Length: 377
Image (cartoon, rainbow, N blue to C red):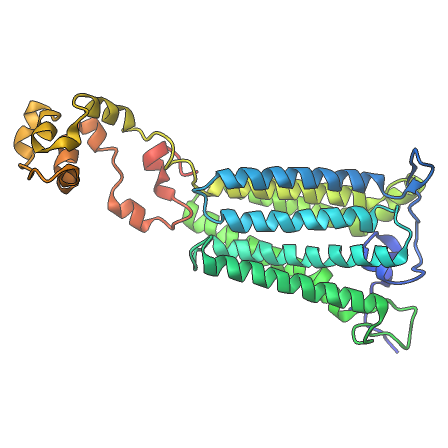
């Protein structure tokens, strides 16, 4: 009888270091990690992965803090949630794959957390790709509720499946109970191995469409491609090269170290990509016409005190274009905005963005941003 390999983790666990392998007892290994001896006398089976995962946590915290300061960037809160999920995945990977926890129950719980956080991170990546199109106001209550609730549901659901598979609470998800030697689990195989690949492919398609058809820029395309290439390289290290690295280093390290490093670099490129396509500083920074506006307003600081002071602050050549304003206080000044703009120097007037440029911009991404700063990104 031909047995399908779908759902079967035997080959993956034999050659690779995956958290899902910790859910099963006595999994045979092609090359067992022995790691390095710690000062306490105990061995740390995967010291390199521990260090890289810790570095990923630190960098992700910095990314979250910096994103908080980029108040004008669309998708800021959703991106923070994505990196928080990556932090949870990295912390759990330290304990699940570090090789220094020998209590099987504790190891199973950390492995389940890593599996669940990996799936929720892939889901959040897909959510961020959709948020870029601003179908809902980003950072709003509805958008954040959908983002948080859906990711938490993915985390809890996947975590339960992993724990049920390990502790055999219901015997629902272990599909090879008649063949214990087969590590077959259709649910975890689909969620942990296949779903992240599908989410990444959809993310790439949506973002490539955005960069090519909306932004018409090359730099974001290069950064996005670099992130995808690093992810592909990480999978090669994890599933193809790992056994050779483990053999050549006599079990000191394996491909999981380099795979974790490539994933970290990929998340770094992802941050750079998001930073390159979101406009956040042009509202707060000085615009090209701001120096002339300062000089214009400095001629008469009390412009808002009444119509006469407003007329006095405008060059004599422009007096005829400014209608008289009623003496109704400071608010009456704003009724003659068009006349004030008309009295500005021509060098300032031509740099003012039109309503059409903002109306036609796709929101989060502004190809017409070049009219303000000189470049679209």
